[in-house]
Image 1 (cartoon, rainbow, N blue to C red):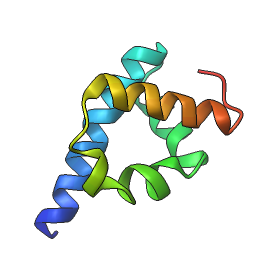
Image 2: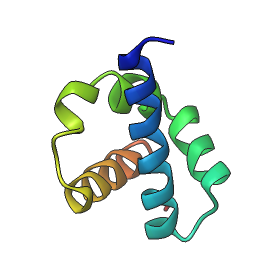
Image 3: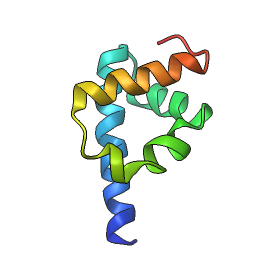
Image 4: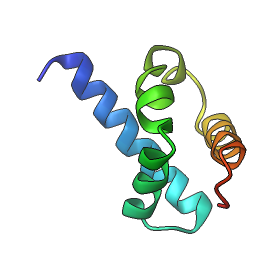
Amino acid sequence: MSPKARQEIDFSVFLFHHLAKSWHKSVPETYQILADTDILDSYIIGCYESLHTLGTEYLIDDITGFVRDKGVVV
C-alpha cells in the first residue's frame, strides 16, 4: 500500500468516528451512508489533498450538509 493510500484510509477512519459521534450512529452505519451516497469515494478520498488540511468541526458540518443534500437524514 502506498503512503498516500494509507493516509487517505487513516483520514477516512478519523472522519467515520467523528461523523458517527455527531450523527449518533455507529461507525459501520456512518461508513455505509458515505459509501452509498458516493461521498466517500468522490469527496472524502477524491478531495483528500484539500480536506485533510481543514478543521474537524468544519469537516463535520460540510460533510453533514453534503449528506443531507443527497437526501439522507442524519
